[in-house]
Image 1 (cartoon, rainbow, N blue to C red):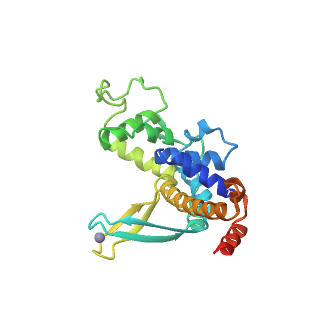
Image 2: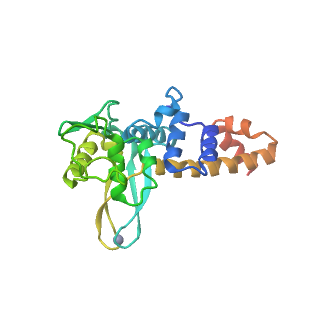
Image 3: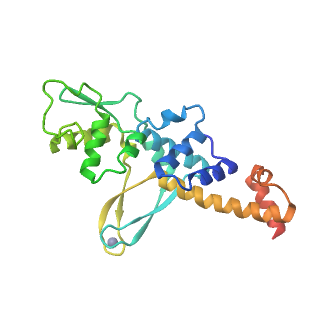
Length: 248
Ligand SMILES: [Zn+2]
């Protein structure tokens, strides 16, 4: 994976300002993977997206991945530091045609588009049902289909908690990168929990931080030398830093 250039970082920061985090992640991948059709990026499994986002952030910002998570018990922010290259080596993107088969029916893995479609769900239960309904790819009218759902209001799969639980665990096993968890311990209250690592959010925070540095550099170098923004962004990081040092 090639790192994002300075001008790509600023373009991404600019375009992502008013976008949802899922869209920001897809914008980043569209820039980094021009060989992929932009429309198809949204249909790739969530873990495929996040493995590639992790590769992109490692290439652009280096292996050290620092972040923080709020303790669910006392609210204190706990920092974490991990090695992005090691994490990436432990993950694999799911196969394009990965399927979960349960009771003669089959589901594909949830995609970014599926995630986006459940953002407005009124509650988490409806969100899960809608997601599983979208991912069901076999004939919904087979004879043994459970008739337990009011299809006027609810998605069209069974609401059996056992089936939902099995589907969730089978999907997670097929696409572990879609749900990366970090073992955390709160140093203030001792609470122990698993924090979800959101690669897209980590990348966006780093994009914002780097964009602010780049804008500051453009502001100072343009003021000192009169160079246009594009010329300043095209400089290598070493030359930009050297000129910044010269103007003090
Ligand atoms: Zn705590």
